[in-house]
Image: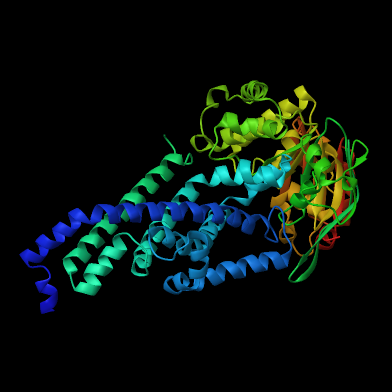
Length: 237
Length: 341
């Protein structure tokens, strides 16, 4: 406890402030671009996969062979149940193949995407399943093909819910970047671990946490705002 | 013309096979407003979905102007659905699109050029009385207005047949009336055949010319509305036409002499029937129960009378009432058994 309190004495705070000014801008930038790129790639893979999970379902608009659906579900559940720290290690060969190295901010995008795309697929699936099945039946009764139902009904009608869920994805991935920071990645996570865990400089760690919290708040506020603005079900707008 | 021939549909459920429809035979002529009425679970929704092949019949066929829809492929069925359109109980509008975009939806599916589609959609919104709501979202509209938009959407592709699946069940009576008016007007002006699925007698009474009564997946009665309603033969029809009389067996007193007086379009307003019988024959009948409706200015329905005295009085009462125009009389000896036949 003594050691902990000492970490907040004036000279330590001054040191932390110095780190804040010199290293945080770079760390923040790394965290932000790794988070955004990872989320984009995760959505890029997760969106079609999530659509497939809904449409290919036994009762979906275009049922696919059961073994294929079973395989997809098992794969997603498997990837989602591996703890992220272990997943980072597991995909090192893949990371080396794609990026050339397993160290650094860019390299950390690979495990983040592998961890996040199954999550994104489930989020897309849940968004699309929220849609009233009667509306899909309406589209079928008007002669819409499965393809048209996906692109003209399911996705447009689910936009507010998708925005809400993608906001959840981006904030979760932001949390994961801190973990990958501990495993060779860059960003605020790395700073927090290097100073706070390895050198007992808690003031730096707390500063990093504050910045991360503010970042989550920022992403969440933007997401909530966009979702509300997109939703035409809310009256009097 | 739509012909349903020996149409059956069964579903496999966890509890085994369920026969939703059994050997349905119906003919719906062009220009009809055809009511299909039944209690919930009777198979109405399945039946209407067989007409546009949202449900594929297990057996039998659906003929649209002589063409067997069951023989068509997916693509051809999708084309057929532009000429057999549908409106729903829950309206099923696209909530993230404006009313105009909703009406344009089937036109986009039909690859109609944008400008043309928009012009047509605006014209249809005019037809349903909502020209000023083009840029409103469905959430800003009342239920009745939403159904009007849904009707405009259903009309967009110039259909031959409009299927209405409990289209007014979520609406209040006044709005129901105005929507039914609109449907009737569409039927008359555009010559669109309308099939109305409902559990509400009043809906059939208000707009249909033909009606089929569905019970447990079977058509138990079918014909002109006035005919079916005035002389309901099947038990299911009776309980639908006169729901308040469905349990009229409890009205019958032990050992009494009961007569069912059936009005087949009698003009009862001219003379007070029961009072006149008391004066003319001296029979003081008491009315145990009555349920009548006025359809087209004539009385339809029935009344159950208790005739005091012995068999002579009963015979006199039957004779007296039978002589009146458009009234038939039945002696109800074992009412309960008759009802359940």
